[in-house]
Length: 395
Image (cartoon, rainbow, N blue to C red; front, side):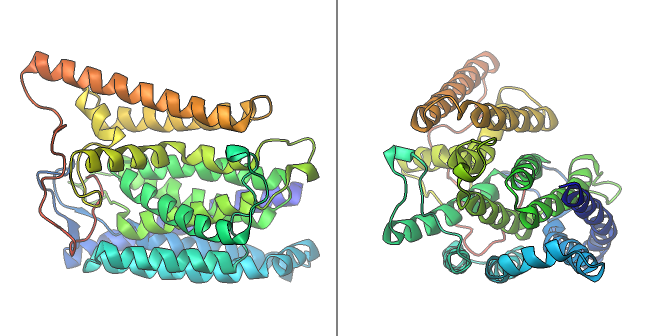
């Protein structure tokens, strides 16, 4: 166990180091080639900021994990070699899906990709993860179901992968939010994998954490005037979303009966770190459909837009959302030992709904007090169809 903890720590450290080398080079190229995320009336940021930070994610993660695995085997660590052999199928197919999503995101950031084409790619990546053996075969008590047929589990897995990828993509709206929420999720996933005896996945989780730590610094504390600020773009949000989906599905393959000292419900463990982005995308989707808007076009009705509308600044809104996500996760994981899983999810939905109603009430109260409209509640999707335009951060 100690060896695996050291490996996870080193994977984080290596990712921080390599990302610290690569991200400044991406900034340099972006400014020389004028590859910027230009501000407009929909976006929060001001000034020209490069949107290619996500280009660093996949190379850094793969290099860090591969280097550690190779060095461990070279030094005679037979446990590592056995772990790689056992998980060869998952690693191979997962790598194919990650590279495909990485190339799609990079194409979108550079030249633009239609959202329909991105959906097709996401579905194909989900199929690759199913080939890796990562599909939902047990709902662990959700709606009273346990083991389920592949005829139901495989389509459900495709839906989950596409859903999670787009949830992370859409929550990427203010500095540090997507990276902060994802970092918290990777910490929880990495710790869980260590506890259930899946150290390869733990190393991957902590390598993802390392690259996000370095990106978070440039994204939140970097100055656009000094050419030190960068966004992750679709390259980053799509690949991070896929990695979270992959790791979440890996957790669902675990049976709590094998680890009586760690009897957390696997579904709660996999879902809880993603509750805020996943709940938010459902709420926004339903809101757009109810208002007869295009549910696939961007607007300013996400949870972070609501928090800005009540008068919070970007950084405080980001911190509060990330803290709320961590609180949700820890509370759910602990309570899942004592509260039935469906009741726990109902409580989560109730809390989320009440929080959004409270925010909406305060926004409207502030609008009446200031005499201005802070959010377009009635017609949030006024933008022209930007199907061919790259998705940009800080929407």
